[in-house]
Length: 195
Image (cartoon, rainbow, N blue to C red; front, side, top):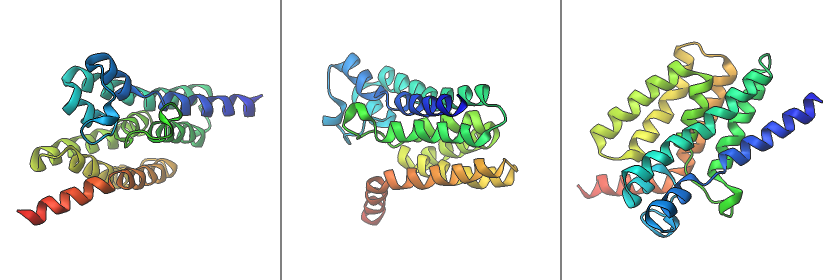
């Protein structure tokens, strides 16, 4: 019974993560397919730039909850199995990044990952969020802030002595965020060279 329950929760976590918030918000607010505008990414930053503050705020909030709620549910149902909570969080991130609802093309997973780690390791996540805001302020680029915060999170998990499985999960999430930001990294490097 527990195995079936766990399998169902993992599947539910993936589907919850896959809810195409940015796509739906842009459709609702502007009547557009966000994938055809700006960077083409259905994440918070592109939705904010193209569809406005309200659509961006909704995308951020819901994407965050898509990561947080599956972890909270997993920990509530199986409090003695922290690895299962990590698995549900990972499923939510994968669902967001490769959503079945948009042909397995999704966002970069920053807000959803933040939701996952807010539930798993709130103190390191809070400090990583502070680093994100500082990096955005200094660079003027949300992608730079996302990369800085993602890189800081596993280090902060280590420094604040989070459980090892959460630290490894943070490292994996960081690697995935960097992978999804490769086009942004190339643009940032090109911009730096042109100055």
